[in-house]
Length: 387
Image 1 (cartoon, rainbow, N blue to C red):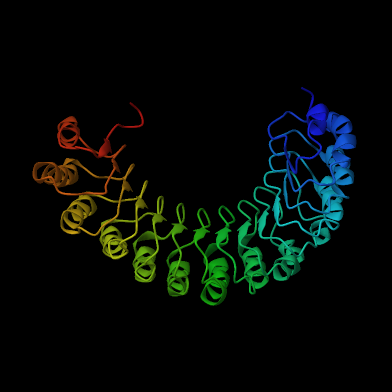
Image 2: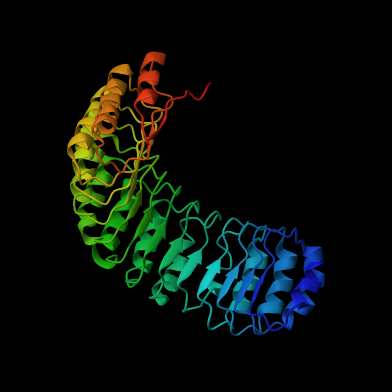
């Protein structure tokens, strides 16, 4: 059924999803007239289509009278600066708008000053070339939305200057629960600005993604100081940074205060065995941690043996998934883990561990066989990526 007809199919419905429907600018010429009659809409999803600037202009005209609109998702289209400016102007009439998702389009800094809604709880601008300087235009918007609970600015080219604007803009956002800033090259300097935010305004923060940001030991030290001020943090992603052993040592101190932490990702950080031991000390003090991601580091047999030793003796651990793929663990470390698994099986000891990933390490076939012989209920992965 053509989208224009489906748009009119139930005029009383308050929600309309045309997600992944191959809608183009040409389609919008047919869709916009019936859509403009749907003034009762509260949720409109047009994500994963082929809408460009002309289509966004038509959409803007259609939604300008949707005073009840609560959630608009036009992510994963091809809307540029002209189209996004039209949308932002139209949204000024939507005084109930709470959730706005515009990820992975093609707009930059132009038009950001036209977004003036002050009732937002979710704002997703990820995957757009906003840039560091333009964040100053967005800062007043963030300051005005004190009820903001979810902000996603991943892959927005923020760098340290943009991180500073984010930190200043969120100074009053005490309701913030989810903050995503991956792949922005904020570096240690940018994290220092965020540290002041985390220390003062983020007591309700649950989810934090700072992956792929060129953060090193200096930034990790400052960041660790802020973690005790995030008492309900449950998801922390610092993967693909430059923490190394020194940064992990600093981080471990702060992690001990995160007693609600359930998932920690430190993959791709050049963490060695010394850092691994320090990290395990901290993680196993947080009894709610379920998932530990340490893929593609420099961890060896000492870390594998330490993990086996700790898990055999820590009955309070909630770890269910440990990912150690692409490290440098040999058969010696694998044997220590096999002994742990064999003990659990032989004595019927309770365990929460469900998945142990040792793929792409340095295990010989005999070590792999021993692990699989005693794995019991634990799913153990030992294949090499090349196999």
